[in-house]
Length: 117
Image (tube, rainbow, N blue to C red; front, side, top):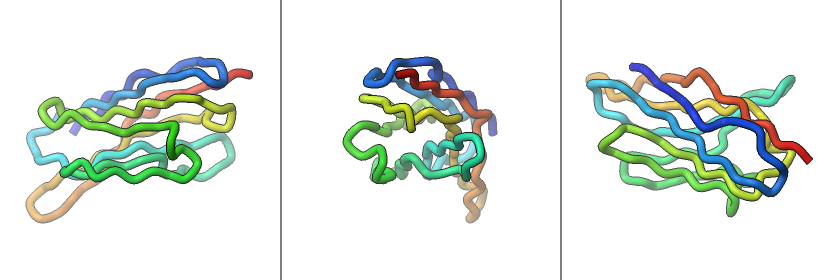
């Protein structure tokens, strides 16, 4: 399974960014999600989306971030609006792949999001 993330960068507070994560795999893709990790902090959940497009968000991003997926392209997106300085972090996608009866999770390489004042 290969995961390729893109879309990070530098943005001013109040601005927007869109992250993408494309999964290359011959297996069925289960849940997809985004996590983030700031320096000195633990990795935390940002948002997840299931195979039937049920989404879940961290309270800190509700109403500002939107997760979506393209089932044909096996790609998950994170639309981030009204970005705050506290959103600055390395964002990692996480993809669950169904191998037999087991779901194996894979991580992307991470993409840096920097929010300036």
